[in-house]
Image (tube, rainbow, N blue to C red; front, side):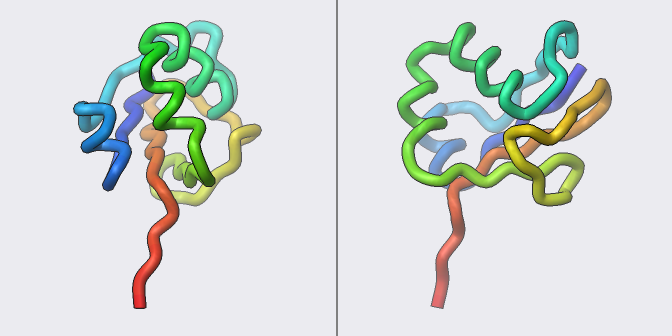
Length: 82
């Protein structure tokens, strides 16, 4: 299983903090997004608007980054401050 967590505005708009995904057929972060879009079509709007940051096990990653069973993949919008 891969633990997918959502932070900040994504957590609020999706109405969920985290979701577990079976690793079958999932090799990259992009595969995770495609799986989420298939199972939760209404999420595509939120997950595809603007830049989306991703981290695997607390390290910044890209959509092409590989994932494996036991990983935690976090999605969050860019953070600004001042």
